[in-house]
Image (cartoon, rainbow, N blue to C red; front, top):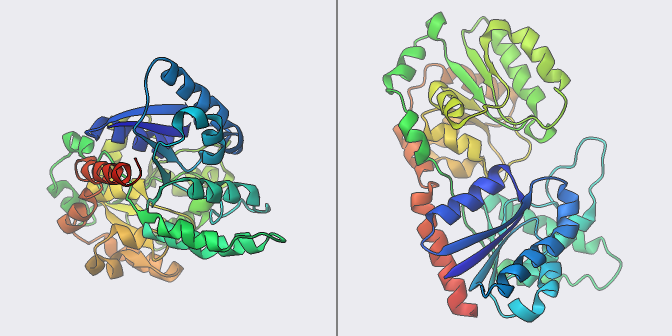
Length: 375
């Protein structure tokens, strides 16, 4: 089977997912991509560029058996521009994110245009795949409110039409690539004994953005420091802004506790942080999956995560009480406890199911199923 994968925002986790599936699939997956900039413009205008890329392939005698589009693709526009050549090709829409429940930046209002584009794209697809159950549930809970916002012809029945086509398909991750960097597990056990020179290392590998609530994370670290607890900190993750003020302050307040600051520039450097850390921390107010957290758990980190969003889905039920917190006091309590918590192999095995070695056959089977139903 030949699959044309449409990815108009080809960067970060979206790029890793697309290239990961192309590399691990038994099918022939060809990526049609655009650089990951200007997301609003991508949702409006990318269909024209992607249609031209498709036309060039068609002119060369190529044709897909199935289209796999990501959530920033304006499917109705793309299909209108390619209707003569691709009218009967089955379509799977993969929802990395959505613009209906994603929290808007502070001081701004949500633009309903982009949520509506995504709803129409869902109705144009034969199958809709969400990266987590939380993502799917939150979207369909909010969608009726979006449609009721409009004055007439709201087509509320379209919610059920889309829902009937939807399912959860977890993000595939290239976790096994970190195996070659793995140290001995005893290193983490030694650090958890509280020796100051090898004090526990807390990893924060989230984007430096408002939806990851860095202020809450830093407040927790300052509270632990005021208690005199020995720990070190690695503030990793991507930053798309001028250095945020809260991070500049953190450099001063954390002092020599801060052993890494900024984006890890190579796979090896990032892997050293994953394997070297004892705890991975999130304080996010938004997360549809959590690739960075899954990577850290795979490399032996003990997760301290909000008891909300997609995070409970990453953990086995037996581990949730120890790893998930409901409020700031719970966050501090779990951080203190984590300093003496042994690395848990069952947590590593729980996230290993997201590796492409497991996920690619699941994806391939779904694509074949859709082709059989629609093609």
